[in-house]
Amino acid sequence: MINKLVAEIKKKDAPVVVGLDPMLGYVPEHLTKKAFEEFGETLEGAAEAIWQYNKGIVDAVYDLIPAVKPQIAMYEQFGIPGMMAFKKTVDYCKEKGLVVIGDIKRGDIGSTSTAYAVGHLGKVTVGSRQYYGFDEDFVTVNPYLGSDGVNPFIDVCKEEKKGIFVLVKTSNPSSGEFQDRLIDGRPLYELVGEKVAEWGSQCMGDDYSYVGCVVGATYPEMGKILRKIMPKTYILVPGYGAQGGKASDLAPYFNKDGLGAIVNSSRGIICAYKQEKYAKFGAGNYAEASRQAVIDMIQDINEGRK
Ligand SMILES: O=C(O)c1cc(=O)[nH]c(=O)n1[C@@H]1O[C@H](COP(=O)(O)O)[C@@H](O)[C@H]1O
Image (tube, rainbow, N blue to C red):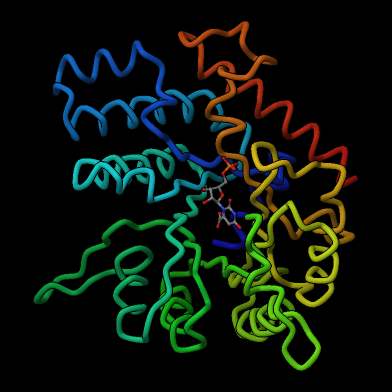
């Protein structure tokens, strides 16, 4: 799957991921109204509204981008109907040829990690049969529990030819509380980066490893160092746009081949119609606003990386 991701980034000349993080408050009224008429103001109604909202955005942008990243928390808040909307979103994006990065940020003791990996990337065995659960292409993994929390994901990736992105330096303001702590004089994120490079060296695609990492756009100095520590690791870069990350800071996340990083924007794209810049589209044309925001983002990122 890392080879497909790289090929699609090259083909579309777009190292960009659209984050499908639908909050109910983002969904335009015409969609919530219709969903509530059909299902009432219920979890089912909310799930239908976010699914229709996603579908509109995906239809408008799928030809421009290589990948999407649905954030499971946004679906999980609506319980079982929300999880069904998550699955529908994953399947629909795959039908459209998109690489799907499930943002699930899991990581636990070995047996529990295995269950997460099987549920999201692999197949579960039921009697004499095997079934895919959510069937994303990549998932995000929290490495805090160490190798036995991460290896089960790697094992399933090897079997399924899929991949993971391991959190190394996150974009949020308090990420330094633990991640920047010095251990033997070196920040923890560097040590995690070295470990990711080690895990990844056994998991190579054609040019890049299918064990990727996450480094926030909001810490470009650290991104520069981490790029050097993990030359063969694809970096998923969240924090562009709504969190303040700028394209002009992102050049160090890319390798000389112009590859090696893929930048995410969620609210900046899916809520584009609420921004002054795209207000002319109006809520009725929210998907067109998202399309324009994707076109602008691709141009912005490509100017920064070339
Ligand atoms: O793993 C992630 O994707 C992630 C890591 C990180 O360090 N920071 C971060 O914001 N994210 C996710 O990236 C998305 C960012 O959303 P926006 O700030 O709206 O673009 C959310 O789904 C976050 O959960």
